[in-house]
Amino acid sequence: MSRLLAAVLLSMAAVSARALPPPCNAGLVWADSNGNGVMDRGEKPLAGIKVSDGVELVRTDAEGRYLMPVVDGRTVFVIKPPGYDLPQRGDGLPDFWTHIRTAPGPTLKYGGIPAAFPSCRNFGLLARKSQAGRGNALEILVFSDTQAKSATDIDYYRRDIVEPLAGKRKARFGITLGDVVNDDLSLYPALNQVTRLLQLPWLHVAGNHDLDFDAARDEDSLLTFRNSYGPDTFAWEEPQAVFIGLDDVVYLPGQKPAYIGGLRPDQFAFLQAYLPTVPRDRLLVLGVHIPLFDAKPGVETFRHADRSRLFELLQEFPHVLVLSGHSHTQQHVYHGAASGWQGATPLHEYNVGAVCGAFWSGAKDAAGIPDSRMSDGTPNGYASLSVKPGGSYSLSWHPARDPGATLVLYAPKVLRQGAYPAWGVYANVFMGQADTKVEYRIDAGDWKTMARVQQPDPGLLAENFRDDQAENLRGYDRSPEATPSMHLWRGALPTDLAVGGHEIEVRFFDTQGRAQSARARYRLETASP
Image (cartoon, rainbow, N blue to C red):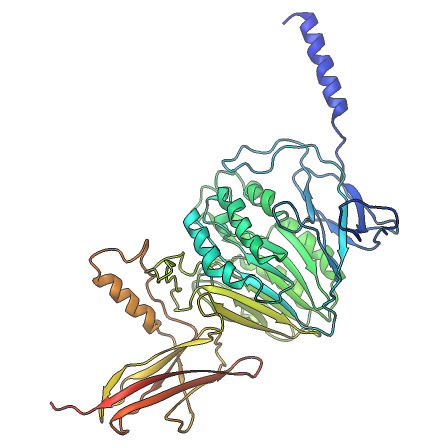
């Protein structure tokens, strides 16, 4: 290379370097009254607003300004305060974050976070016109495991979940508890366009199928997810509740299994900085993907040391709820001393069923949508959380094709009069818990208590049999093998009644004291040996 050419290249590099903005992690938070993204004359800065990079936490000063260290690879986000909303990004997601990227990251199949020199980021907040104040209930939609593996699955998601739901529920926002897609991260934009039809701010927690599996370390395994959805640690505040989302998937490249449930040191640093600012009179909701309980007896599926440390940070809060996904079944777990929880009352973890059910499997209905019920017999669908002032809350499960259904009954159609009463009615109560009282009666007679049983769902067993007997596939994938359900009840059917039809009525009372019921019929006939 000639000296002249070398001098020219050095000169160009110097000019290029001077043209790049200096690394920056500072900005302004203000009330954007007209929502144009620019602080106009008369618009006021907001003091005391919390801003974090997932590790450190600062508050804006009297002039609405914040300043944080520049740390490559972190994502800076504003914690939405009560009484405010956030503007939308171009993809419809809430605009509350920016990446700090001062050097190129690893080369990943799905792109990761592109290299860029950061500029200062300002956050305009929108004062809420319709206040959901402390005297009102707050409703949130809760999805888990949309888990699309193709454009076909995204179409199922649109027709089965989103379109029937859009505009039907008065929710403040929604959250998806991980496994947004099934390993193919290129599907994020298409899936987001469907979720956008709900016209709600939507938050996302990362799942084990949202990882960059070509990343060499856990720290880089969510770069593509973060490029689409922002921080993998975040908080969101409402007058009735505070929500914290945490990536609890620890990637273990080269190992089997390739991940375990747990938390990183930076997440504990964030919690230690943020939790002291959280009011104790609100419900504190923790959203994760992998359950905090061990999915298999004797197998540590969530690192116990991390769970103990997390529980220690949470135990002083009187109202805590954990929402998790991952299992593609549904159950309620109450943590106590055996799992390291030392709070005044047991810690409720609701392990939410999957939007995709059993991975969009099973025979298709008349609309061409797979049955996709989960292995415990729960229909695919979504949950809702209603929070009242003072920390009280209620949860509901909404089957996709019958959002108001709370249980399903299985009973024989015909029995022999006088036969030994060995056959019964089964009730799969989707949100049933260990202390749920389920009762039944025949022909409007006396109510009798049903017994909780841990057996496979009879309806799914029948699907398994139909799949076994079919000469050809009944769907893209067959229904899952039925596993014991945690919310199944049984009552013996009497056979000493008159010949003819008899009505079965089953009821239970939900956590709000509301009676939920369903009916079925069976018939008694005479028979000779």
